[in-house]
Length: 363
Ligand code: F6P
Image 1 (spheres, rainbow, N blue to C red):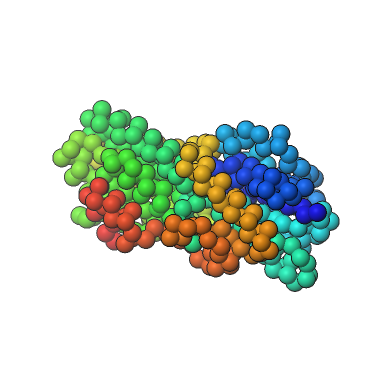
Image 2: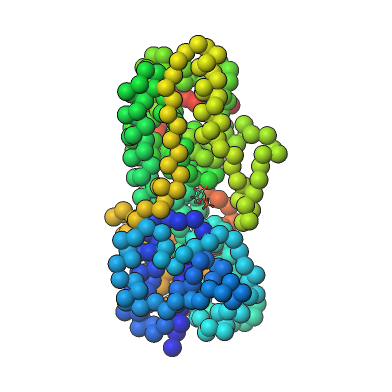
């Protein structure tokens, strides 16, 4: 008489509803698990003080949710008292908890797993990695990344058209990704039109002979337009340390590098007496709130089913990783030990350099 529960936490990622649906289908139809609960609004829904009630998943509940963006269970950031969460697991007789989320969520999952072990309980905690940022170790590609890239690339295409059709047109697009440049680099590569890609992994200077603004000026004067992609976590050294703020989970809240670059561009070209047409675009949440594309639907389904197999085989404290083209089981702690950034020797980055041909990363 197993009971399982699934919780979706953190920022949205295309494919969340596909995971919920596939976890349910695999448990209910293949393992005949009679009771599968959906936790409302992330870890908050495991705290009775929140007033949120879990929902019992049924075929009707999961019907058609795989076509929707977001998560039908709702999500939230931040942690809850781990003892309170485990009390809830005991009270509601939950044997297996599937934690769908990124780095912060998996830290929470590891803490829950520790508390379960400390109390000598027989319960499984299995992580399913979710982040459009693609920054989890041992997860070469997380579900949602591909869809976010697709949406980001559409935005780059629009920005490129705008830039080309205006005298000295500059398209400046800021893309999400937290402390990693996967989305910016991937979208730039997919578009084939980006001339500059600024990512957190590569420090750069704005001013000076070899600074970004001079390179941009050269490009604009020679070709008449430019497309610049900036990852939200790029150029953080351009802000003073006192600008560094953190959210409830301890993640650094970035000041807006896109706006900083936009303002410096205007000032630079004005100083030189060069008229430009700069269009700044920040698609922000648009790239992650959309339904999953075909690739992400497949990946989220496979990860969800793999998570169920892991739990039913008696595994706990396990994250579903994706490494060397295989779905693998990784101890949660190993996956969260450090965050992944874009490897500058990787094929992805080499291809971006080849396609943009612009060395903007000098310190
Ligand atoms: O981690 C996913 C992500 O979309 C990041 O790219 C971004 O920095 C962050 O979440 C913003 O999330 P929110 O505003 O929902 O906290």
